[in-house]
Image (cartoon, rainbow, N blue to C red; front, side, top):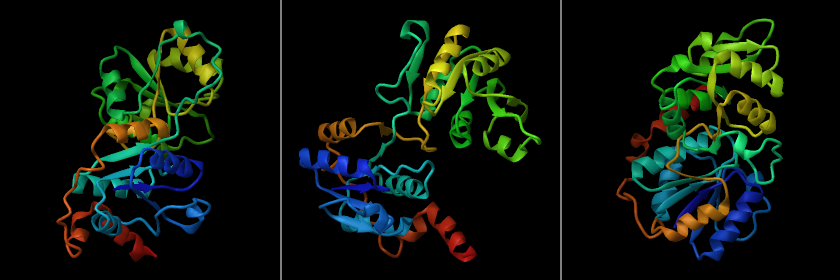
Length: 288
């Protein structure tokens, strides 16, 4: 049995259609009736995602794998899913929006710039560790931080931010790179502005979690000989991560993860003690 955690939308119905096509047994979980609205036929659970609740759902339905297709970056539900999957030793599959969509207009030829799509944060960090020169991030703080934690020399990591009346130290610290490497610029978009940033930092790599300004990034990188890496923006590391439902279902169909099993011996009284997410939930309840 596959448990799909979803925040609704077109992809929920699209994945359900593909899962039906391959004969998979599945249940959907939505956190609100608004998210579940218009989903169509199928087994659906609606309710707040908590560690204890998800543990109970997995155990009672003998779930052998979890597919997280929640769209919100760094969502609490995704964190809960990761904790439950790890503790029960069952596979966790993540579906994300692709950083680079098919048909995205790119004016620079592929022969003029080196670029790649790498959704594993660990793999991005490994690329940085094996590159001589600095890396510049055009990415959200949470994604930069996860990658930076796995980089040997953080002094070679830079983040450009828009110049403001007062430097936001708290925001700068969220990136997880040396404070002096969060540099202010009058502009951080457009080819000329990006080119200035890459030259000023001596960048050999440009890492982005957004396809915004893709042509400008590629053209600027091509001029300085920097490699462009497109990564994901979920905020969490995933072993099994896909940016389209076809690839995700292909992975499910080729594997035996729907016939395998996790550790379902966790008792209803004990499951609360196993979840690191529960402590945060209790803090949230106490503050309400």
